[in-house]
Image 1 (cartoon, protein in one colour):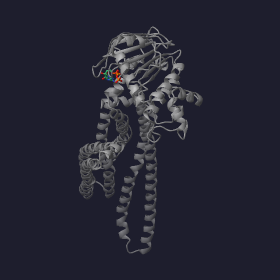
Image 2: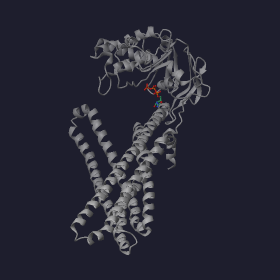
Image 3: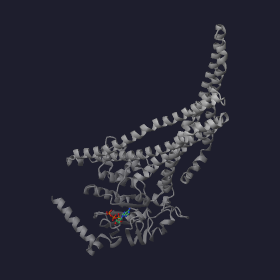
Image 4: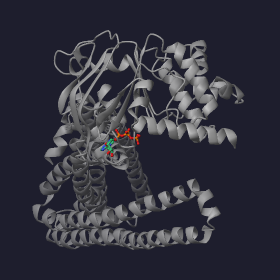
Length: 599
Ligand SMILES: Nc1ncnc2c1ncn2[C@@H]1O[C@H](COP(=O)(O)OP(=O)(O)OP(=O)(O)O)[C@@H](O)[C@H]1O
């Protein structure tokens, strides 16, 4: 329960919705209890006048006058009851319009709070948690919490006010009868609580099975080419059928429990009514209460069943909400490891980069990707980083844009430790093209101007030209307005890479970091891009991580990484004369190219 205290700030924020909602609830209940009171009055009136009516049985004219008068009285009561029912319904409408609307506002705020928190968390957090888990906290868990701040709050308010008012009215009439009438109701609450738990457990299982079925179907649609080419259609259908069978069995079992739910409730309500009529009837005979009181009690019992029923329901709802809020709090309490340090400043970067005895170990795997690493890059220099896979090249790039902080040593930009520069200022002046290209389900234009939303079409087109992707884009029917993603055009790997290069170029930064982002383009396009980049990068600092040697590009420095350390460093000529990894790679590449030329 203590976990739910995190939501109190929202109750304070929406205190007016809450106060009004509770007020409307109380008014709606007050109007609804007039009905049994009026029924009692009608019954009593009827009982009182029945004897006189019988006495005048031989005088026909008097009898009809009596009946006419009585029907007027009945009509008056009928209309009044209807009016109160309408008023009660109207305030019930207002109660939902305040309390349920408040819960929707809280749901919206909480989702935004979680989403914004996800945005400031560091990469390590995202590596440590599964996407599905993050998604379920922002969707399912928030929905469960909403049940607490909305329906649970509404029904508990209703229950409390109703029980207080009705029990007061009942005790005033006859405390003993009240005790008998109410005795089965707590049993109803407890039963509902346990039945609800069973239903919830079963529903959870069904939910998991349903998501399993969904992912099986999804995977088979995405992998349909593999399934068909390996003639595995039948096996795939069987796999789906097995999962569906489990789902069907669980659903049938839930339907059985559900089927017991209503009848057992009706049984308990029936018990209460029988008890009321039996004990109440005795009291009427003894003259302790009137027939009207008995009728009134039967209506009270009916009015109290839903509130008692909701106690069990609300209790399990609160329990689930508390568990969900605990999961949400767990994430909200995570502090980003990478954030602006106190005193961090916005700095205009010229482009001098320095790694000073840097050692970095990935916190969640313990892999030391960069070891005692030293590197100096002057403003405007172009540096190539080469090395076997897993040698630490991408990690080096991640450290430069402060996706991680090194455990030892420092990374400096123009002499400032990265920690002294605000993240906003740092990242807005460095363009990073990651190895695993990511494009949003949006138009090509919007993907290119992602980091610079104000860029106009001409600038977008220039960036596309510099990244050698303009021609490809113009070949699409809708050109730059072409939608990318599931319901849009499927781009080739090379096109995606070049669009993400265009996105980096449009920022016009002082430092550019290309992480193996030309791996999917052919040699001719590569030459074209390199040619374009040469002019673009003229006064900029650039680090190009690659598996291939760009012989055409004159790098100021080439470094070769191995196991997180620099093992070779120098110009193309220097490295060739070293006869190490670089020279070997170059020779291999040359002979490969010759082979492909002679083919
Ligand atoms: N996010 C991560 N979490 C944990 N370990 C990682 C992570 N990223 C990389 N590593 C590990 O760090 C080491 C260096 O990886 P890195 O990606 O920097 O190499 P790389 O030289 O860029 O490789 P490639 O050329 O294949 O991209 C590898 O052993 C890798 O398994």
